[in-house]
Length: 188
Image (cartoon, rainbow, N blue to C red; front, side):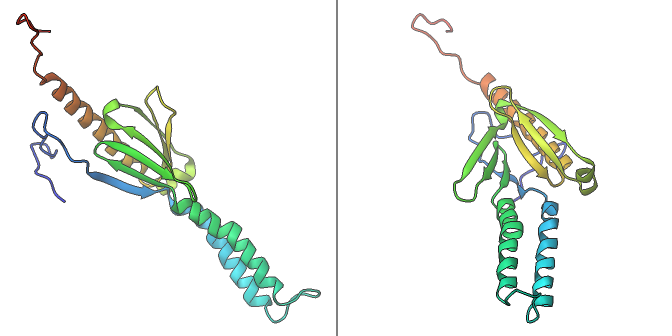
């Protein structure tokens, strides 16, 4: 979906007081590099079962190897993957939403119009992969952490832009409200 562009490359601001639709800016999950060890365990378990099946070590039955490999894969591969898959970050033109949880959904939101500070922390490995951890804090609520965000600098810039635009629009709309006249005809 494209929007009309004003001078400077920014979208044209809606008329004062006009409702603005909430548009999706970005939707993403944490960086998948954390699943590297899970992939390694999956390959090792498949290789071990393939190598030892039909000729198990002394004292073991053939069914023990696939059962043990299945348990290891469940704990070390499936659980981390499902945990990663169920945590999503959504940035819209009005707010940031973090959803997480396998069985029960947990949802946290920060509205851009309220304003918040954005902290960016990047370890050496995160810098190598272009990732980082963003911390959003408004001074009132518990800080919201976006953990292991891919393209962290780009997401940081998008959040800064959204906060700026929302605060400008909120200020403009507050300034354009008509004054209420009381019964004597004075401004109140």
